[in-house]
Image (cartoon, rainbow, N blue to C red; front, side, top):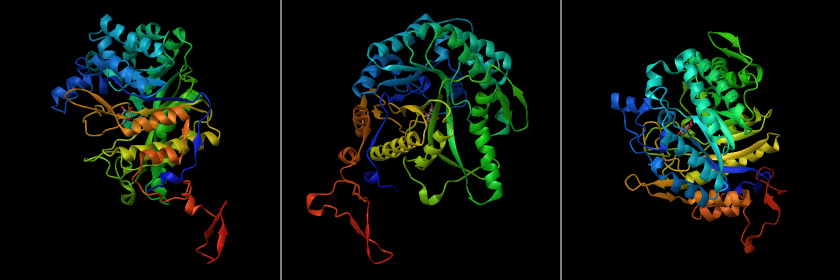
Length: 446
Ligand code: BGC
């Protein structure tokens, strides 16, 4: 494990934007017209139910965001509320999202609006969903309808969230359709809004499971292309290149982001000896953060640096980063390490403009309420939100536009310090010398 108390004190650039992120289906509750809702029912999956009841409690959530000092709030529009039946708009839902944007704006909080975050109306799914190019006319109509209504308030736009996921050859056609959906969304929004536009990319840091194994290295290259690079390559060049798919060029795709929005959490292991080209993580680094198996088993802030270094050609927003854990102290450690990594990437020349913690509150993690990502806990009966210590730690980081070991120490009082950068008590003040275990002599420490 790392020693968080020996991290260097850091400060972020002036005007750096701090905030948090959520998504409609994960917090609103009762998304009865969404395709996912129908699947939960049909396949007897765990039910999202009322989630955090945020559709009803959104005003309270704005107060919470404000109380926690966030300068920006990323949330998503639920298409299935806006257009529950094909071609029929729901004015009450439209007003809900306009009001959400307006109130954030009036409270000095930048609304960062995602137009699509993992769910769509049931009718869209039944008609073919993202599998067919000719379905994009429905998507374009939705964007065309919503963008002008929100444009006045929106600070930044995220057209789609994480359509890049899935490292399989079969996901190529869907990714192509969604890449086109992204580009369409970008160009429609541009007709109404001056605010910067992107799509949030699920950036996975891939690593060969066996470092020197040729096949794992090849698997790693493939995983990385199918997960990450196909998207950046397409945006940079207009060319969609994907394994076992005839490459296509589309001028509309080229240049269709104003900034890179990246959701970055941890690393994954490329393993050529598994059918899905992904293997288990190193056992010695596995953390048991919640009571059940979950993809998040390791901290890997180095991955954040390498991710960001690949995106040095445009401004970058870390549109999601966070940790699911039962013990909030892990979240504090995770935050400290990842913010240091981001600062390091800035020092290496990456223009990182902001950081959004995932998530403002515990929510529906696509099939379970067990993984708790929240800065705030949510009571499942009363829906009361309770900020955790990490929320106050994050608030102080925002206020100071950075942090140092003393601040971290306030929130991790009981952990022993393993490092040497903390201000030592007067009686043991460092002499600037330490024992050199190898030479048996005394070495100078700078
Ligand atoms: C998604 C969120 C999800 C989070 C944690 C991101 O990939 O955008 O919807 O809850 O990861 O798994």
